[in-house]
Amino acid sequence: MDPSAPLRLLLVNDTDRPMRQLRGAFADAGYLVIAQADGAAELLRLAESERPDIIIVDTESPTRDTLEQLALMERSAPRPVVMFAEHGGMPAIQAAVRAGVTAYIVDHVSAERLAPIIDMARVKFEEDAALKRKLADMERQLAERKLIERAKGILMRRRQLGEEEAYALLRGQAMRSGLRLADLALQLIHASELLD
Image (tube, rainbow, N blue to C red; front, side):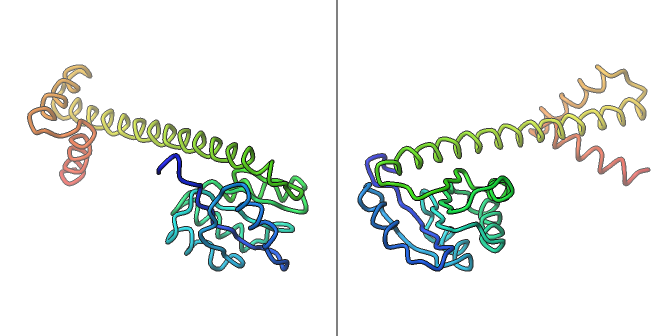
């Protein structure tokens, strides 16, 4: 993304009132409104097709449909989401955060406050995404370690080897065959299951 280009916003109207005032505030603050979803039904489709930089939801209190669509979007096309709501309360805020809302703002916001709110939402979104990537990487490493341990156990049992010898045998075979150690371990486990 070109850092000098204006942020591209998708507005979601989850109220009965028109969004003219909010649209005007974003335009005044230098943001580009690329699309507007009137209610939850269009949210996921527009998020995937328009690929906005950030999603702004205007609501009195988030509806179940909107929260469900945000949760689906969080899985398929994650984006920072700022929700401007008239009503707060811990249950509404918790439901919104679980659905993927990055910032939940109660009250109407002046144009001068928009940039810091959006910047904070973007930073929080990036930090959350980095933590999710780190967690997924750790889970993958743990799963691979379990495969390798299981494959070592098979070799130790079948070949009467010690743990270090079994690991050296696995590692050497992985290097010779150009496979990752975890991939070779999985192949060995599958082959062993066929033979048992």
